[in-house]
Amino acid sequence: MKRLGQHFLINRRMLRDVVVALAPEQGDAIIEIGAGHGELTDELKNESEKTTIVAIEKDAHLAALLEKKFGNSATITVVVGDALLELAPITQRIAPQPYVLTGNIPYYLTGRLLRLAGELAHMPRRAVFTIQKEVALRIAATPPRMNKLAASVQFWADPKVVRVVPRQDFRPMPQVDGAIIVLEPRPGALEDPMLRAPYYAAVRALFAQPRKTILNNLRNSSGFSAGGSDAFAARLRAIGVDPQDRPQDLSTHAIAKLARMFAPSE
Image 1: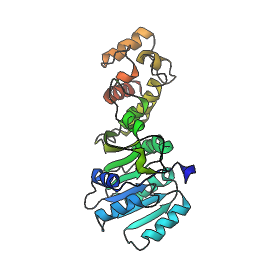
Image 2: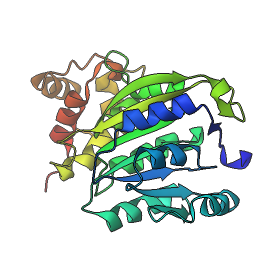
Image 3: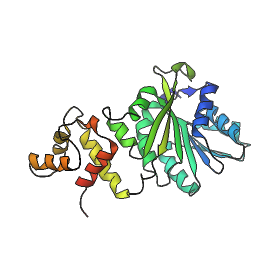
């Protein structure tokens, strides 16, 4: 279990806070990532006996225990597998049924999972995760503290850190505190599907060297070219971006403007 980076949340009050933040509505399915021993699954089940729960667990031994624990429930399905591989197919199978997404996420998995969630064709109505506190604060950062992770996640969701979870509430106890973060998908995230790729390209270029200026980062990227430095800087100013600012000063709205400006033409 330690090899998968799992630290199980055991504090019932904190587990209840996750469920309250998730706030599943009638008709929602619930997808839980990394169900472990079923501590959160139990709380979700108690929320509504009629709610469909899909519990994903990569560890085969733990998945077998979950099957034994919840095998008699007609509303709980245990899926043995990697959430990075299983999540998209599961969401496609339940579409168009609305769903909420939750889980106590291993720290090493957070970045990749959040990127995957943002690329789902059938997105959750809400996502609530327990993750490392420092990572949660980075995700929720705003200018002038914007960073690569925050810019990537906030393209598709508005984050809110609702509670710090002390490390003592996990077993085995990690070396850092956790936090409960709520991600509310942004209604416009899928309105312009052609923007997604250039937006993430802009994020990679901008934050390649965060201490450098916006102008230097973009000009050093092979994906962004616009003639001489003066002309390039003028184009940035035309969309309200100061070329001498740092990437940390940019909002997601400004990054989207950059992405549209430098997106490859059809």
